Image (spheres, rainbow, N blue to C red):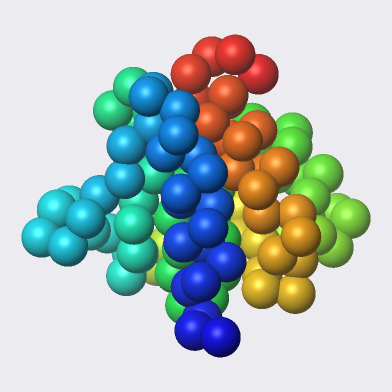
Length: 109
């Protein structure tokens, strides 16, 4: 199984929602990301180095990290307070967390 096949399935499911778009090859690509998911033009999830990285409220990020279900997202020396890394060992959590992230950026969560 290729590294991002689970993420590809999440992209397929979330893109059934017309509010969600995914970047494709040649589009904007940051953080070594693959297939950035966006809702209302706001990036909310992407896959990098086999990890799901999502945007969530700071309190949810802190909770996931405290529970050992996520890791802080660091870009250089800066910790991104509203972003969390969810590793491949937690793939069963990826879809619900990505949906929660989408709702957060849309102001629905």
